[in-house]
Length: 568
Image (tube, one colour):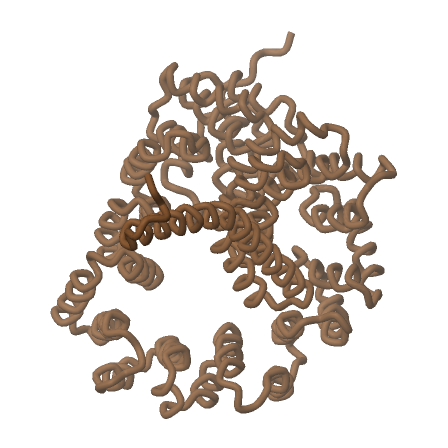
């Protein structure tokens, strides 16, 4: 073929073909460079997110971490930073990212953070599951022991948690905060000497002006049965601590508010001085704090009607205060005004409550029906309606809304958990068991649900060999979790095997009883009575709040005591 001939069209085709090949080659060679740039930019966002966290700017940290994930979600450093940030915002949302980080990195530090976050998210089955893997990898690391202590504490196994922390401290390799954690956990010890020694330790630590001093003050602020003689000292130290945040100072004011000698006017002025003037966001936060202190007159004075009608958050704070003061007629008038700064479904929600309180039952029923219909196909809003109905005791509204939510996979677990609690409050054990049966079908690997299902079944006298065997498997799987033991003990008791029920507690320290849960104490009393140990039963029974028990649990307190066997 003659390329030098006088055929311009052919020459043009050849040139275009060559250019196309060059462009394709250039494009292929440029793609790795482009990917490298995206990864490099994503890692810059990771660094910016980490710096923002150090500066305690959580909003910026979250924004930068999200930007990194959008650019290059394949790098473990990017995923890890997203997990770190979400752990501080919402631990439950962080679990997915910690799981991915651990799967990619196989770094034990990431696994440890995964377990810690699962504990913070109250996902105890997941924490136990992942801790089992951690224990295999680093069984002799004090950091592993500390996590085990936290898990035992979450399982209400205080004696074992304290014993583990003592081992950590005695090892000489304990992290700096191990002693502080032991002091915090010791407040739940049954030994008054242990409680006293550690309370003194926290008092001494609270005089420091560093982070440990602040942490000690925060523990003392929520310390179980903190002596009243300490209240003023703790509140004053927290107010003056150089590292204390505004939330710390508000918490100190909350403690001061419970002291009879406190001057309310001075207290409120101190609270107001913590918030900048002419800052609407600060006004919202102050309004929430005043509401938490039940200072509803001050809320209504702080957020007048004119201000409330300009912003949704201020409006909601104001009408909540009016709710608390039962200003139903004024609320009815306000909610019927045009152009309110809230969505129509929220207005309908409050109107339904107001109409109920005003005794206009037909209008109230119609309003509840309207709001339910309006959000039926909007799961997030239907959830809000259901939870609000639960909050104000409108069970007949909450129940169908929650049942509707069960159909939505994203809302299913929450809806079922709320239904369980609703039926528990109604003392409707059969309905509660039915919900748990449904829940176990949706979440067959959730051992907490399995345990609750067995427990309610045993209360209903469904204690056959299959159910007993299932309860025994749960205890064998995690013998440290007291809730599994309580269920097995109840099952053996209901199966007329009192000695086997008593054996379930054979290696549980006597100091564990009474526990902090009334229904566990009721099972313990039933087992002790069935084994003719009336003194132990009476001691624990004396502190049980019977009103917290289901009727079926209350019957355990009257379990017949058999005659003692004759002495030889």
